[in-house]
Length: 328
Image (tube, rainbow, N blue to C red):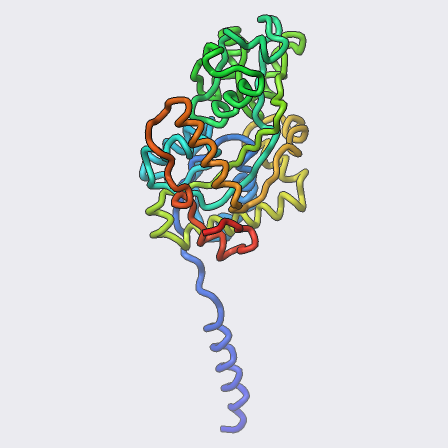
């Protein structure tokens, strides 16, 4: 019997080691509506490098030309669990719906939204926009930016001929001459400048920096019922955030390939974006300011909701508590 004891102990050790191994993570499905721009770079990197699969997610990406359309599609389509979107569509929809929440900011920029005008249509300065046909994607960040831009030059939206145009169509409308000017974001601005001769264009910048935040939003009931799924998603994009900071050149290539953009364009505008997964107190201030603007322009007669109810803190706080500084 003694000669078999070592083998017995070995067998017990091996079995104990086997029991300590984690069972394979069961893969779950998730669908995200994403704007095809640089802003969701953490999604593009996580997809390319297999971080979602590593986290046990089978992620389906539905592509949209704007965050506005991505969010509104999620709110209408129960098969879409998540959307990437900036602050303005969140505000406009919040007056009528409360079934979605922000789970994290993915990126922000103070140099993303601009006004691009046709110089050959008589626009050389901001004041020349008065009475001109200006295209913007209404209920989007471009819409809000345009109001502030005009205000900084002693005008309002009533001083221009405003046209509601989907983000993907703004470029062609300006190139064809259908519009005199557009307000949009990258890479739409850069792509338009590549096509039209510089002598025909005027790039109008805001005298006051405008910060654009871009968020991951989730159907509220999905976030509550599927906390583990949300955590898996955030685990993957947090890993992608680290990769972007450590390997910016490779991340730029991945992003350019995903959004079908010229790598040179992506490289040139990359530094305008800060890719950080956070939940900051400034989110609430920004949402409240835009809600008051929506009320002031007559969009609604309702009062602004409590935007703390539109933020789901738990998942990110559990994964990276230092990234959350919202008072709640």
